[in-house]
Length: 380
Image (cartoon, rainbow, N blue to C red; front, top):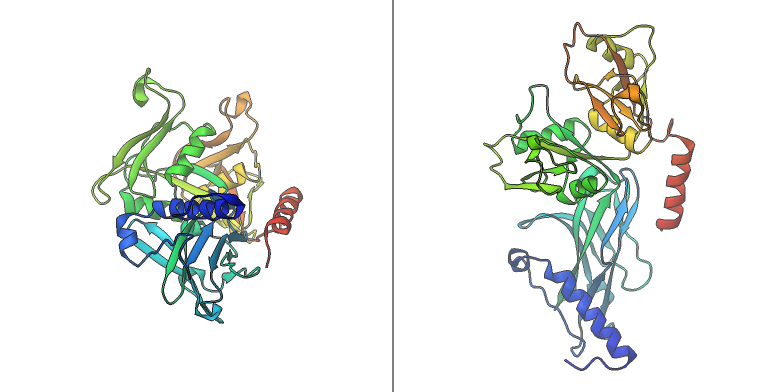
């Protein structure tokens, strides 16, 4: 390979290094599924893909651009021969098709159909626009550009702003296998959290003494305040890892993740406390439904819902969100307080409702912030 002398050659060397780094994260299995050619600068007719380092961040319901550019010798190839393919990497052996473009043809797949388009901001732009982002869109994506002879790939990570919350069902702690944990999170308006999401939550102060499933099949838990009942007093703080567990046979709690609400959570004022059936009917009378646990956490974290009144949620638990801690509201730390799962028929509490009205009812400052973000980050 020629020495990296001169501005032009140094630029080519940097580009080749970026491509090598982007491709190094592929496992042997991933590389084996297709021919991947990493062309150096002294060869001709190459296709070289470049993606942005790090990650791109948005929220549920937002619009995001997954950046990807490619470079090739236009004198040797017709641009119509170039195929652009985006896939999502769900684990080391599984890829899901997202979007394909060849010449003037465009096709989206599965849950991405109708939500994706190429940005096409000049020659070599293979960046993908994803609209109405969902929780399931979180993860790693591969941008592959192919001509008749060669191809190259780059990686982009899509992250979401949101909140991690621990969850166990009415039956109690450590009752969920991996698949049941996935289902429980979905039922509470969430997905199983990733390690990165749990680690970030720990950095922000999450301290939880019960181990829970993560999306990769591992079982972990975050500890900021070591104590005897949580791995002993003198042990180090951090995210403690039980490793990868048997997904069918072993039982734990779940760590779920949720993002921005497409609607509004509110405490419904009533003239008296309600049983669970009465609470459900009261929300329905408002054109709403009982709020789910993930929705209450999102309202607490994102919409700064602060209410020192316990209320029913959809899963039959009693909780309330505290942004500004005070003595009579359950402790010194902000968070969502959990009073457990009382008798649905005879115990009486308030109620938290959720109205699915997208932006309607969202505080003006949040609407304005989202609109400013779209104005500065989205090109359609």
